[in-house]
Length: 171
Image (cartoon, rainbow, N blue to C red; front, side, top):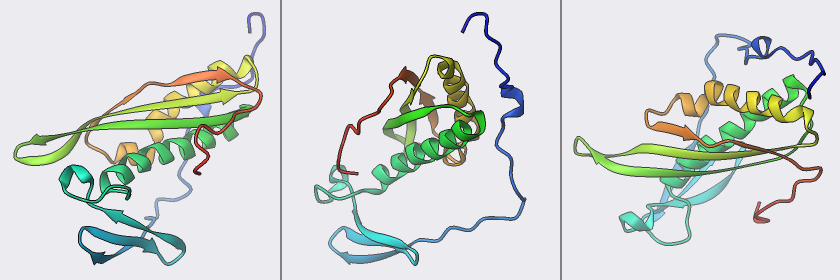
């Protein structure tokens, strides 16, 4: 990008609230037996959740701990995509994984560290730096991350790829 000037101004690309009015989200859970329940909302598909195997729950079900980490990664994606749109980045893909460490602190279990590994794929060299800036802004403005008291460590990557392929087709 040497010699080229970009019209993009990172200082003018922040998340703006449309109003200070509170936004309410609602979920419901119904216990189905043993250590399993069903979570849903009136406008969303329901799914099973359970106590994780580490605490005596069954294998193969989503646990609150996995949902917690998924909330962080999916919010990170949504926030990043908002910046991609505002910054006019040629986005060709995005993936993000997370690892959380749970410890006993002052007699209670809590997440103490969460490492997130976002990887953005852009279509050209000019967008690499803009994508890095978008990642930094995402770290600052991600609603869920801002609501967590565990330390969140970000390990961002940006790569050039014309077409991104899903790494896990279960989605």
